[in-house]
Image (cartoon, rainbow, N blue to C red; front, side, top):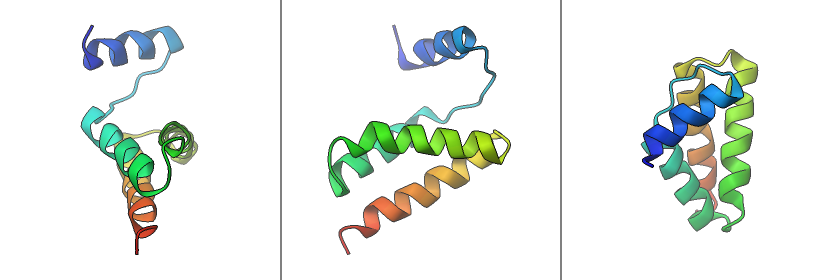
Length: 78
């Protein structure tokens, strides 16, 4: 099963309609795992998803939260 198929299947099972930039989420998980520590990847993606939902849940809300978290994670090396 592809990631897109998994995304679609999981979203349907959870009863949510959401536009997900899968590449951006995976890039964020990579940045968190690399720049913070490995367990930060699932925690970061969970918190970003939750924050985006609390902001309204639009694709723009998700993108903004991803950008904020990625900037914070990569700043850990500075």
